[in-house]
Image (cartoon, rainbow, N blue to C red; front, side, top):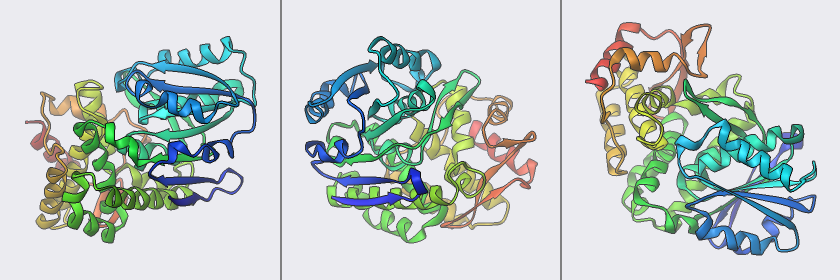
Length: 359
């Protein structure tokens, strides 16, 4: 097992990464203060891992909520199922919520924990690659609205994150590839050595070599933890983690949640951001080619499959958390491994990128 810590003062917490961690109850119990535990999972993950996690917590008062699976269910109505279960079981402020599943489960469980009785403890047990390397770390929680993705939420840090890469054994290939988009993101935005590691080991990663997976997950979490420790509430540097996300969220919102997996949309979005960086004169054609090559070797899309007009795409981009005073802030690259926040890009060049990808 490898361990790293996200340093946030009194809100600091450990991130455990390895194999066989769902057989080590102490990783969870060390971070539980009360006796009441609500395990939140979904219809896909529950048959696979719910019994195993419940057995680790046999000494506690356990209740469960099994949610429908899919990004289209990441709504306030679904979160209300968690609130109802907590109230019906008379859970108090000493309770702990355990998120067992992918990013959708983690985001909604965290949001419920942030809101229930104005804030209770929660633990992340991410079971998808995307959630292991990104959404389970950093305390962003929330739900989607029909008009915009992740527009309703709160910052609420977990007590710990337990990443058992053995759960990836049951992950579908498409979901695994979707997670690779977020892994690649860390290399592109700030860690060129890691990017080269991915380029050199992409075949082993796609073959699910556990040694390589653990290293990739560890490095991704370490990079994210370092950024979050500097900027927990995304007042500055943390925005770099949104590389490709403004474009990607527009794809999800326009084509409908679930038609594109989050990582698939982010894959296309990152390539759009790199392409705009190239048009702005920051990076060479070779950087665009390297990015597209790595995404394609990860079995990720690099173009939009579905009809979106350029005007609809731009309208969707304008409803995003990165919009400040009506101006869309984008994350672009100065070079591989060096991202920056840009709000002075040339609008005609942005229009060109959108038109090219929307044709």
